[in-house]
Length: 315
Length: 273
Image (cartoon, rainbow over all chains, first blue to last red; front, side):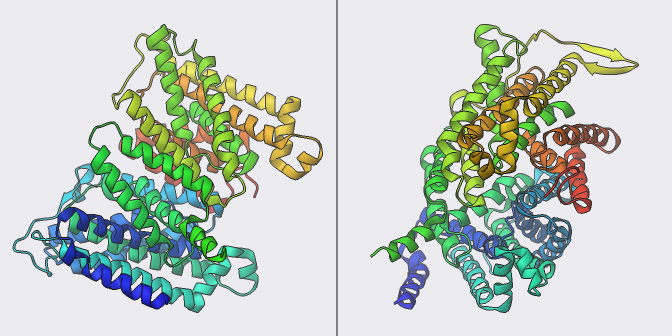
């Protein structure tokens, strides 16, 4: 039953660009997949391992900047840049992990905010990489998979984004069943108890952040190749870090499908309010968005997955 | 600046120490306090120094309302729900301010105090000096209230162990609401002081709030005197880094300092776990 539903969903996702040929619905779906993938990646560290990071934009920005710099300065294909960005993000995550994993709870969350701000300030002041002005991805015609640029239609982006999301989900699924997944959850429930039972807490946390950072960086590269322009304000901001975890929280933290569900609800909502109400300079869309977050946090702290679970249990 | 940072952070620290909730809308509270000062000046020609009690009262009311309307509902929930409730409030207030008052930068012209003072060859802006002195005064008042008055002691007791406090006949719910009111009033005072010499716009809270979180974590959560020391350290670091390295990097240096301290003392300089 469950398998059949998943298969149907998957086929529907595959067929979507065939049915909807207008750019806007495709754009919304691409954003759902991208943010869904980011939230799934964040969920590995925060949901399963219990380390609530508010600095994931760092890894997103590293992915975006690495590939764009390699394309703009080194003429390398973004696919190589994607791999390089993920590798660099893993390296940076290990360096960050060394100080911040000593902290717990709110101290950890605030330290990750501090790291995010440091990295953003550094990039703003890094003139070779465009500084505060940002970077353009050089436009290359015609469309080609090697150049990772498709100007004619969003369909290819659509399938790449879907692929990213499926990859993130597959990794999470694999982790859920592996030994490390159990270690992660043990750390989340009680770090001291996990350590006393022989879990190497520091090493497992570093593993979780490495996987999470690599997946987030892939999303960053995709974003750069999709939008063709990046600057520190768009790929390193605190608001992005918070948006990522907001999606996961809305859907349900520590569940496989929660972040996807959250993205499927929140992204159309924010894109919709942006298109219909934004642009007036009055920030009405953000007003609704903020109000909604408060309502969700007060009424359904376990996220939509919690709601679904309760619904299933009721009859 | 350090003293103002400390006052902003003190409000945050008080609320956290009391009930372990980080108020992510703290910067927006500050922004609203600055707007209160601005409108008191624009509509009634009240100088920020005069309207200071007004800003404090308005913010205390806001803090009280926030506790009753929002925080009480998520108090039993997971930490993430608390983070997002206050974060949603932050987005709501910020875009609300933008919706009502636009994104223009506003300043209060011709304040009572202006010009600068030369102390041994070092120039100090008079508004800044007044702000530090008043912030220190407010801090002293807060400290005396917490350590001497009966209500202050009840607040501290609630912070230490809310069940034991409740058993001793302290109405913890009222204490929580009071803590929010006082913590927000601190921000109200800080906002009124800042309005004397800083631009006022809907996004102004962000940078200050980030510094406040770092200040609180640097001093140790829930420890009000330690917050003052941390605030001064943050203010000094910012100035020194701006002078020695480059102004653009000063916040990065402040955050780096925080990470370095945390490496050495994970619970903050004076904190306990």
